Image (tube, rainbow, N blue to C red; front, side, top):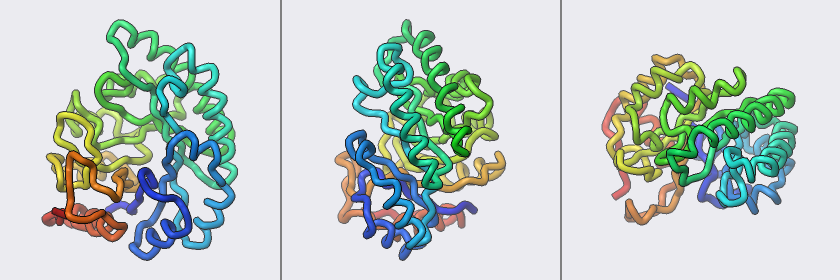
Length: 272
């Protein structure tokens, strides 16, 4: 149904990871790491490993923490955050990365501050969208949970209004205020990539699909019917979170099996 992707979030980046992706049959990689690792990231090495193991670099998740340093929605921080992220976009696009994922805010955000924060985020996104386009790439705004900007399709549409070239990264475990169907039916044509993980509908969990409450067969069909043609990209670590203990760590093969089970509409195997 879709190509299978996997984020590097929570994993040790390097040749062994590329080899594991290739051997398991994972089609593409999203690079995702903390600010310090991003600052020192060797894009040239990533490009060489991508070519050697035939695992394309599908996307790059721009750093978003610590919130007191990086935030495109805070007037006091946006002035430094936006140029920093623009330079990272330029560096990544030079190495063939075509999609850059952005968190539209940190948190917490008081209700009284939302309008001002949305306005600042729009100004920042307009610059980021322009720089991405100038470098042959696309900026994808991720929907976020709780008090963050982008917490529902209404927020997302307001953010996308900053520039017609902006697109959406659909995180399946961040919706706490509306259903997956409502979100996809509203913004589905603008979705260019995904972050796939499961949750309990109470808060984000980043569990493997089948460990939470999402109807995965229905969601995959929903995306397909919306015309989504990107990848099914997992944002789940190998190690179990404390909220969902497992008898062993996950491996790349687990994600490929999970995707194929979902695409076939059959039962989902979980690691207990």
